[in-house]
Image (cartoon, rainbow, N blue to C red; front, side, top):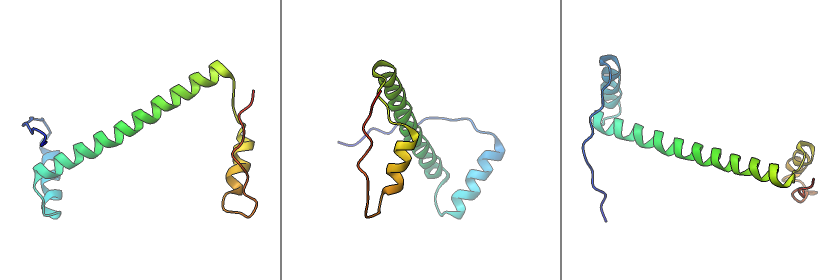
Length: 95
């Protein structure tokens, strides 16, 4: 199924418009393509940031509820062992 594409107007100042036009010409693309690409990349990045933020809030709430955690020292020792002959298992959460 093909997504329906609808036109949307945005207001940008003349300086930004000129910058977009110059960059589009340098990339052998249209200004329209460049703006769509910029918006798509921005939305993708911000969705990932928001998912990370939600995961962080969920982890914080779980910690507040259970008190289970691993210390920074335990995690650092585990990470430092990665790729060595004595790789450690992931630290176990505790209170």
